[in-house]
Length: 453
Image 1 (cartoon, rainbow, N blue to C red):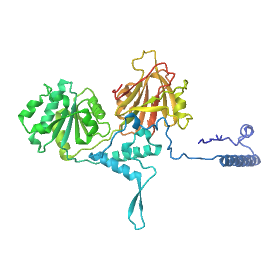
Image 2 (tube, rainbow, N blue to C red; image 1 turned 90 degrees about the horizontal axis):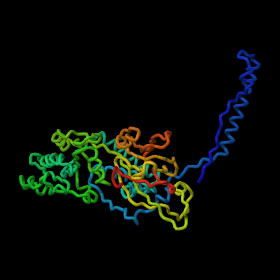
Image 3 (cartoon, rainbow, N blue to C red; image 1 turned 90 degrees about the vertical axis):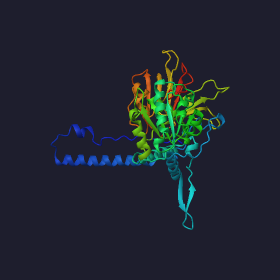
Image 4 (cartoon, helix red, strand yellow; image 1 turned 45 degrees about the horizontal axis):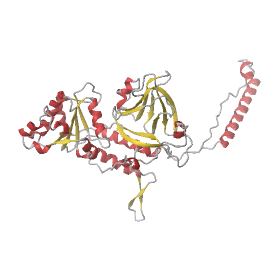
């Protein structure tokens, strides 16, 4: 469906003779003639506008329900489908209930009793990847998260914490003493509550952490000191009531990476070089944790991006292929150009760069938003950052600083070839695509929060 736009030029109704030759103090007759001329000119302009209006037909897209077929390929056949179970996390239960309220309308039957009816736009967001949502569904989801974030910012959640997830850098020996100190404090009978503490599996036989001596001090600790694995975080995130990180911003990013779908509330203590995401001082961890367990916590939701790697589908006959034409041009109904090859949720940024290629071989990328081609970029790479990640690689690349609560997408070129390219701020309700053209001089590499490169 195409819409036609007719440009309308607003012209001055006065003629040059009326403005230049007429003296400022003219007679009343000339003023009357000038006024009549203006009225006639205005009447003709209105007639022209009415004529153009009658020829213009305004058509509205059906809520932008269209998605490119290159993104509509089902991921079931490529091993990306996940089984989602109902969560016991209070924050996520609020979010799920809010989605159900927006997805289903309410009506009353003949007896006056309320009855739920399925809306044509109803969709289970927890089982659908964001790239498969329509424009309205994506906007509804973003709106629901913003409303929930506003509510959570003004209330304090008093949770019944029983299971604590401890996360630190297991290879950093300077942090293992602090990890053991926090674990023993949580396991102590002085807390009044028997907390179950999970530490990384690699610490079970670590000499520095010395788990055996912790259990020997009090045999009751043996049942409450447990060990987590990456598989456990992926399949059973609802097992943990609270995540406590000991380190810097990288440790918080690692927590986001471990919990790809459901992230328990994270309390971060600063023990690293950077502190944008670590709010609490480690020296006060007994007071801070006691206050959180006794008085509750205030949850601050952070926006994460869902990035999907789309691999090009090989063709046997067609040798000349155009990426722009495939993504925003005309396609055959049965033509599938790309297939998904991996989906990741990130907290900081997605970077597409030239990787190990020589410095002379710049990365060529095409940027698309929904069904529009935005621009072509010649640079060392492209950084697509979240508001939380605006203080990381995005800032080093010359991008804009952004408050974490702003629902935006930050796009910044890394060492752009042209000085005219400037950082772009986009809304979070679009599906952004960064593609490498088929005729690019060098391949590109992608990283998700610095991982899976």
